[in-house]
Amino acid sequence: MERELYLNPKELKRYKIGTGIGRFFTYLYVIIMAVFIVVPFLWMIFSSLKPTEEIISREITFLPRTWAWSNYSKLFTGIQSIDPYGQPYYSFKPIPFHWMFFNTIVVGFFTTAGTVVTTILAAFAFSRLNFKGRETLFTILLATMMIPGEVFVITNYMTLSRYTGWIKSANHLENYAALIFPFITSVFYTFFLRQTFKQIPNELYLAAKVDGTSDFKYLMKVMIPLSQATITTIIILSMIGTWNAYIWPSFVTNSIYTEQLLVSNGLMAGLRGASETTGPNSVLNLQLAASTMVTVPLLIIFFSFKKYILRGVSRSGIKG
Image (tube, rainbow, N blue to C red):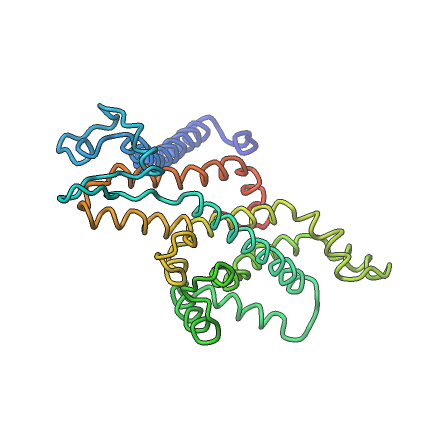
């Protein structure tokens, strides 16, 4: 508006036209990207309510012609068939969703708790404590973010295989330990929270030290309360990361013990057997129904805490 006051009518008209064109293409880009993201998701939901024959039909339909609500109940009850000898068997075994959700919540809780504790302590050390080599050490930690995550999966697997008996263990606690301990730290979250801590005036820290306040008390009474939005964002993103994790749980858990599986690898293990028995296209509707079931909780979490995520990102000075 201030710029418009210094423009003559001709320049003002050109400015408004340019602004309008830029806004048009911005909205057009956002709409196109929304279509690419939303349409496949809606197709998954509606196809999860279709019979298999309708999904693999050459005639593509967005909405189901026949609404097969039983697809969701079959995930819990399974599908029984009769073999050539007249004996009943499960052509599709029930998926143990209760164990999958329980294990994912347990692993997510302890992983997130460990991540939050280590992240807060590390971010405080790198933002407020002065020690020799602080910036060099922090630079080295940031450099590890350039290494692909798959490399750490291999080294973590080799370490646990050599020094512990946690890999593919039948023991529940050892299985939890293998899923939790390698991921109770995060360089990215440390950097994320450090940016927020550095925005808090250092004069507060110096005044607290003059009053005899310990570093830990200052962290608990000042830094953490002023950084609640960023910490909440870290908690949410860490839980979502655990929910989506697939490679590491597939390495360290044994699909034989279905009560140890998480949502990600458990879903694949439950559907793989049916695909191998009755063919890859026979359970497409159940695959889509199961995918919808494990996706909806993430959407609920995201939309419930969206304002905290956006506030935390803006407080950290990271745009994206």
